Length: 383
Image 1: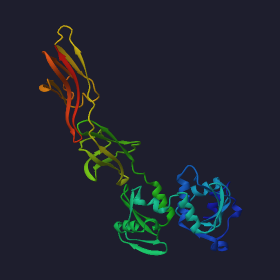
Image 2: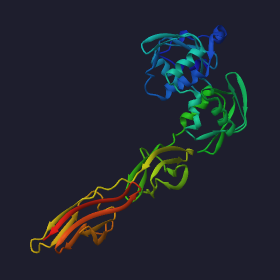
Image 3: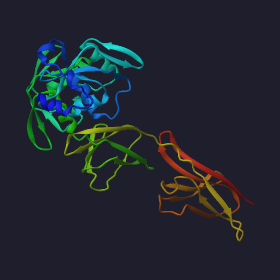
Image 4: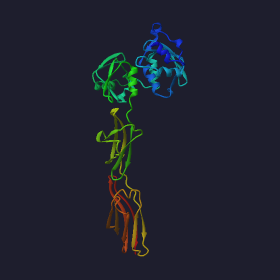
């Protein structure tokens, strides 16, 4: 194993600086933060902008070998050449870091943990938060150590109750081995260390992140459409409104949800699934449904061949989407009504007058409780 390590880590790492564990084993700080920090570097193209490590510093393998890292290229080699049998699990403190332009010496495990939290480097609890990858689940029972308290967890509900009750104090460490049920392969695998656990998480395809397009129509109707940036495999999804299930659909065919909604506030949610995402990911939007009064308008033309005949032409934004009526009043008394239906009429009204005082109106009634009547009128006087 030692010879293999030397062969795989050449160029950026000085082989003469390898030490044997019996010489310095008491200096090795074995901490979960080392696993999550190296995992962070392995899955991100750029180093953390909040801090950078000042080289050289020393890391320790699970075999007890200590190695000096001279530069970023060397660190990348270490990360890439790990395996389930040969991985980094410790660090030699202190480590010097440059945080926002200030040099800081990390002397203890607690200081390393605080650095990672302040710079938002994901920790194990973040990776496992509601199993965001959702391609596996823990096989219970499991044993956790949380701030030196050993806890037996018998099922998933207990795990989430514990997480909820501890809040920010939830910092679980597993007692290995543990077992994972992998959804896609429908198998149970044994995991013996954090490196293997994080590798399993990294191999999971992330859940699809859907967005919701909302197209408001008139007369209380709304069209909802699920949109995905990438569709590498079929995605099924479910619609919910105010936590009530509406229906299920799939990206294998064009599909939109059309609903008529009353006035009020609604939470529209989309739950998306793939074969590697059994629990589904949620995306939601808030929708406030209001019925403003439509702004009505029309043009009028008097016929030259017969001045008693007028043509009226509807001219407003929603004229092909809502029903409305042409209303004629004479001497302020109702005289005539003609209704236009959405998309069925021509938006034109013709009327032949006799002598008198008239008012011709476009009207839309009972849009909502604050809009009992939308109206636009013009006066016509015939001698």
